[in-house]
Image 1 (tube, rainbow, N blue to C red):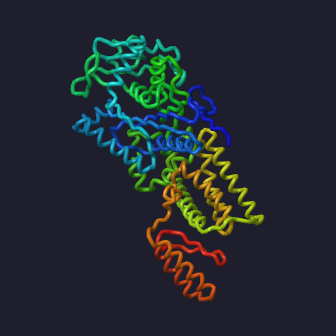
Image 2 (cartoon, rainbow, N blue to C red):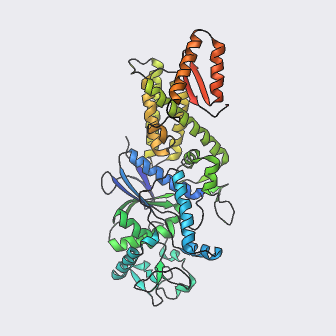
Image 3 (tube, rainbow, N blue to C red):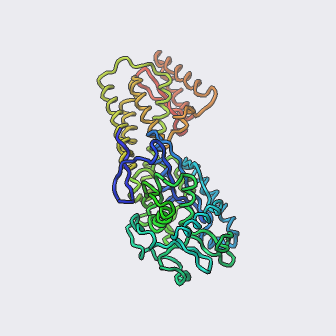
Length: 479
């Protein structure tokens, strides 16, 4: 199998993926600032990194994934002020929404650190930067990173330090250079604060991710990622302060997910085009939505389209149907002792689909190229495998299902062994009814056989006849 290659934002080139420690991957991705509902733009980024992690699992890597929750920030404070609520109430409410949405999208993060739980570590980090000469405190109680002391600033984002000027006007007079950025912010009246050597205050935005990533992944991280909008200034500043502290290369691969757009425009409150993830999940379901979010290369914009979501709902249903039927047939199948020419041809096609999908995923997690193999697989199954008696074809089809499900999570219940929707005697009874109907057909009692077919269809069981063999599947009742 080909080695995995990733596009490293630092250097803007494809590189063979080789973690610092063979077989182990430390992965840190920037999570939400919890002041509003999680939306589908967030979902695109979070799902993309979840899929990357899952593919690394599939290829044998042990991955530890950390994703932060920013629970103190200007946006949180402003939202609390606007709504007349305590900032902690705002944080807890939207954190709950975020975690519920992650669960519904089948995204599992190993460690979910919150900023306010790491104030002690943040203060220690800032103190070390001051001791090393990379940061300075001001009489007002603010602490800044001195950008000019870090000569490699701007290489990640390809921007100069002068372009980093985006600080508040009130701070400009006390900074050595206008583009120095805040590590610690002095408390303002009415704002939440914590005691520090520089007086009461709170962390700057960028320092939190450096501190929490190092605490849980060590001083060298294999993958650091987030949305493309975080390259500058957030990730540029993270990189500067982290490498200033350690004196060595910090992150090996920087990966960034592009925008989710609506009619070609980036989602924004000013345009009124934000779609809450909760609404999208209620309308489309987590399985179809997850497949659609992984339908294009993560470095390309993905435009919201209801037509595309309808197509991926169809793909989801097809994949589920194939997985359930292959699992059921494999339980009853006998080993293949001889394959006809047409089965040999299908076998080769199935194996090519597996290879093609892996090659697409290995090439910088190209979800767009990989998605076409899902469509081709379902078509191949229904056209060629369904009517075949070969257990060899079922085994190879199952391999495709197991591998792709590891990334897309469209059939965890089926692949995990708990694939029977019913419990107890339900499925054995359906098998028995199908067997009785087959005997009726053998005796040419077609009226009773048709009656059984019709009654089962009303109950959501569709029968498919292949000569004397009959398969059944679950469908929407009455269809």
